[in-house]
Length: 68
Image 1 (spheres, rainbow, N blue to C red):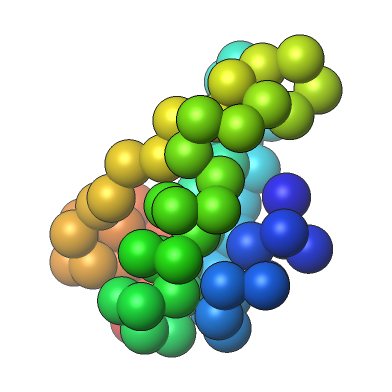
Image 2: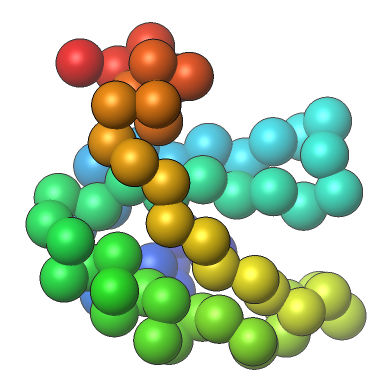
């Protein structure tokens, strides 16, 4: 997932939630990277599961992962 996401822009943070059913969190250096990832990944299949891309506000994301 990280390799595909890096095609869209600089990935500042990535977290794979091992306790979930496949949740992956990505933070890009610019909004354009997140938008490009949405266009590239949303609706595709990965290991038999369809990818659903959702956006998150920066402040809650940073707070959740302890980022500045």
